[in-house]
Length: 197
Image (cartoon, rainbow, N blue to C red):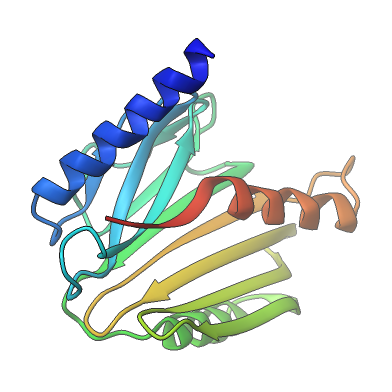
Protein backbone atom coordinates (compact mmCIF):
# COMPACT_ATOMS: atom_id res chain seq x y z
CA UNK A 1 0.00 0.00 0.00
CA UNK A 2 2.84 2.41 0.84
CA UNK A 3 4.45 1.80 -2.55
CA UNK A 4 1.18 2.47 -4.38
CA UNK A 5 0.61 5.62 -2.34
CA UNK A 6 4.18 6.87 -2.99
CA UNK A 7 3.80 6.10 -6.71
CA UNK A 8 0.49 7.96 -6.77
CA UNK A 9 2.05 10.99 -5.05
CA UNK A 10 5.00 10.94 -7.45
CA UNK A 11 2.69 10.86 -10.49
CA UNK A 12 0.40 13.54 -9.02
CA UNK A 13 3.40 15.78 -8.27
CA UNK A 14 4.72 15.24 -11.80
CA UNK A 15 1.34 16.11 -13.36
CA UNK A 16 0.93 19.25 -11.24
CA UNK A 17 4.48 20.41 -11.94
CA UNK A 18 4.21 19.84 -15.67
CA UNK A 19 0.91 21.72 -15.86
CA UNK A 20 2.57 24.71 -14.21
CA UNK A 21 5.77 24.67 -16.28
CA UNK A 22 6.32 25.85 -19.83
CA UNK A 23 5.68 23.05 -22.32
CA UNK A 24 7.82 24.24 -25.23
CA UNK A 25 11.01 22.50 -24.09
CA UNK A 26 12.35 19.05 -23.47
CA UNK A 27 11.97 18.12 -19.82
CA UNK A 28 13.74 15.49 -17.79
CA UNK A 29 12.52 13.81 -14.62
CA UNK A 30 14.31 11.37 -12.36
CA UNK A 31 12.03 8.42 -11.64
CA UNK A 32 12.56 5.28 -9.59
CA UNK A 33 13.85 2.40 -11.72
CA UNK A 34 15.05 4.65 -14.54
CA UNK A 35 18.05 6.87 -15.12
CA UNK A 36 15.63 9.59 -16.27
CA UNK A 37 12.48 10.21 -18.24
CA UNK A 38 12.45 12.64 -21.13
CA UNK A 39 9.18 14.42 -21.80
CA UNK A 40 9.13 15.41 -25.48
CA UNK A 41 6.45 17.74 -26.92
CA UNK A 42 3.89 16.41 -29.39
CA UNK A 43 0.92 18.80 -29.24
CA UNK A 44 1.26 21.78 -26.93
CA UNK A 45 -1.41 23.84 -28.71
CA UNK A 46 -4.11 22.33 -26.51
CA UNK A 47 -5.22 23.92 -23.21
CA UNK A 48 -3.04 23.25 -20.16
CA UNK A 49 -3.52 19.81 -18.61
CA UNK A 50 -4.64 18.46 -22.02
CA UNK A 51 -1.32 18.93 -23.80
CA UNK A 52 0.40 15.89 -25.23
CA UNK A 53 3.98 14.79 -24.70
CA UNK A 54 5.86 11.61 -25.56
CA UNK A 55 7.62 10.20 -22.50
CA UNK A 56 10.80 8.19 -22.99
CA UNK A 57 11.96 6.38 -19.86
CA UNK A 58 15.67 5.57 -20.03
CA UNK A 59 16.66 2.50 -17.97
CA UNK A 60 19.29 2.91 -15.23
CA UNK A 61 21.89 0.83 -17.03
CA UNK A 62 22.08 3.40 -19.87
CA UNK A 63 24.19 6.58 -19.97
CA UNK A 64 23.89 9.59 -22.28
CA UNK A 65 26.39 9.82 -25.14
CA UNK A 66 26.24 13.64 -25.06
CA UNK A 67 27.16 15.73 -22.04
CA UNK A 68 24.02 17.88 -22.24
CA UNK A 69 20.43 16.65 -22.08
CA UNK A 70 18.73 19.71 -23.58
CA UNK A 71 19.72 19.03 -27.20
CA UNK A 72 16.92 18.02 -29.60
CA UNK A 73 18.60 14.66 -30.24
CA UNK A 74 19.91 12.41 -27.47
CA UNK A 75 21.55 9.00 -27.58
CA UNK A 76 21.98 6.54 -24.72
CA UNK A 77 24.05 3.36 -24.64
CA UNK A 78 24.73 0.82 -21.90
CA UNK A 79 27.04 2.41 -19.31
CA UNK A 80 29.74 -0.24 -19.76
CA UNK A 81 29.94 0.14 -23.58
CA UNK A 82 31.68 2.53 -25.96
CA UNK A 83 30.01 4.62 -28.66
CA UNK A 84 31.98 2.80 -31.37
CA UNK A 85 30.80 -0.65 -30.27
CA UNK A 86 27.38 -0.65 -28.67
CA UNK A 87 24.96 -3.55 -28.32
CA UNK A 88 21.93 -1.32 -27.70
CA UNK A 89 21.25 2.35 -28.38
CA UNK A 90 18.28 4.56 -27.51
CA UNK A 91 17.82 7.69 -29.61
CA UNK A 92 15.33 10.44 -28.78
CA UNK A 93 14.51 13.29 -31.14
CA UNK A 94 12.34 16.37 -30.83
CA UNK A 95 11.43 18.69 -33.69
CA UNK A 96 9.96 21.79 -32.07
CA UNK A 97 7.85 24.16 -34.19
CA UNK A 98 9.03 22.48 -37.41
CA UNK A 99 5.71 20.98 -38.59
CA UNK A 100 7.26 17.57 -39.21
CA UNK A 101 4.69 14.77 -39.39
CA UNK A 102 5.18 11.39 -37.71
CA UNK A 103 4.49 9.72 -41.06
CA UNK A 104 7.29 11.76 -42.66
CA UNK A 105 9.73 10.71 -39.93
CA UNK A 106 8.88 7.01 -40.25
CA UNK A 107 9.18 7.14 -44.04
CA UNK A 108 12.44 9.12 -43.84
CA UNK A 109 14.03 6.73 -41.35
CA UNK A 110 13.11 3.74 -43.51
CA UNK A 111 14.45 5.36 -46.69
CA UNK A 112 17.60 6.65 -44.99
CA UNK A 113 18.49 3.28 -43.49
CA UNK A 114 17.58 1.32 -46.64
CA UNK A 115 20.06 3.38 -48.68
CA UNK A 116 22.92 2.41 -46.31
CA UNK A 117 22.28 -1.23 -45.42
CA UNK A 118 21.94 -4.70 -46.91
CA UNK A 119 18.86 -6.88 -46.61
CA UNK A 120 16.38 -4.45 -45.07
CA UNK A 121 13.30 -6.27 -43.78
CA UNK A 122 10.28 -4.22 -42.67
CA UNK A 123 8.59 -6.09 -39.81
CA UNK A 124 5.97 -3.48 -38.97
CA UNK A 125 5.07 -0.05 -40.29
CA UNK A 126 1.90 1.69 -39.22
CA UNK A 127 0.46 5.16 -38.85
CA UNK A 128 -2.45 5.92 -36.52
CA UNK A 129 -4.29 9.24 -36.47
CA UNK A 130 -5.86 10.03 -33.10
CA UNK A 131 -7.19 13.44 -34.15
CA UNK A 132 -5.13 15.55 -31.74
CA UNK A 133 -1.91 13.71 -32.63
CA UNK A 134 -0.59 11.13 -35.08
CA UNK A 135 1.57 8.16 -34.12
CA UNK A 136 3.94 6.30 -36.42
CA UNK A 137 5.66 3.00 -35.61
CA UNK A 138 8.41 1.27 -37.56
CA UNK A 139 10.19 -2.00 -36.77
CA UNK A 140 12.93 -3.12 -39.15
CA UNK A 141 15.78 -5.63 -39.31
CA UNK A 142 18.87 -5.08 -41.44
CA UNK A 143 22.55 -5.92 -41.93
CA UNK A 144 25.13 -3.16 -41.63
CA UNK A 145 28.93 -3.56 -41.53
CA UNK A 146 28.65 -7.31 -40.83
CA UNK A 147 26.22 -6.63 -37.96
CA UNK A 148 22.55 -7.56 -37.89
CA UNK A 149 20.47 -4.98 -36.09
CA UNK A 150 16.81 -4.59 -35.19
CA UNK A 151 15.36 -1.10 -34.76
CA UNK A 152 11.99 -0.05 -33.40
CA UNK A 153 10.86 3.56 -33.69
CA UNK A 154 7.83 5.43 -32.47
CA UNK A 155 7.21 9.05 -33.50
CA UNK A 156 4.25 11.22 -32.55
CA UNK A 157 3.32 14.58 -34.04
CA UNK A 158 0.85 17.36 -33.51
CA UNK A 159 0.30 20.43 -35.67
CA UNK A 160 3.74 21.94 -34.90
CA UNK A 161 5.93 19.48 -32.97
CA UNK A 162 7.11 15.94 -33.60
CA UNK A 163 9.01 13.76 -31.14
CA UNK A 164 10.18 10.20 -31.21
CA UNK A 165 12.17 7.37 -29.72
CA UNK A 166 14.24 4.78 -31.54
CA UNK A 167 15.62 1.64 -29.89
CA UNK A 168 18.19 -0.38 -31.82
CA UNK A 169 19.87 -3.60 -30.75
CA UNK A 170 22.63 -5.76 -32.14
CA UNK A 171 21.33 -9.25 -32.82
CA UNK A 172 23.85 -11.47 -31.05
CA UNK A 173 24.69 -15.04 -32.03
CA UNK A 174 22.66 -16.28 -29.05
CA UNK A 175 19.57 -14.39 -30.17
CA UNK A 176 16.92 -15.58 -32.61
CA UNK A 177 15.06 -13.13 -34.84
CA UNK A 178 11.96 -13.68 -32.70
CA UNK A 179 13.87 -12.88 -29.50
CA UNK A 180 15.30 -9.68 -31.02
CA UNK A 181 11.89 -8.51 -32.25
CA UNK A 182 10.31 -9.25 -28.88
CA UNK A 183 13.03 -7.25 -27.13
CA UNK A 184 12.52 -4.07 -29.19
CA UNK A 185 8.71 -4.32 -29.07
CA UNK A 186 8.81 -4.80 -25.29
CA UNK A 187 11.09 -1.77 -24.94
CA UNK A 188 8.66 0.48 -26.83
CA UNK A 189 5.66 -0.81 -24.88
CA UNK A 190 7.37 -0.46 -21.51
CA UNK A 191 9.45 2.71 -21.94
CA UNK A 192 7.63 4.92 -24.44
CA UNK A 193 4.23 6.41 -23.65
CA UNK A 194 1.96 9.33 -24.41
CA UNK A 195 1.00 11.56 -21.50
CA UNK A 196 -1.44 14.44 -21.29
CA UNK A 197 -1.15 17.29 -18.82
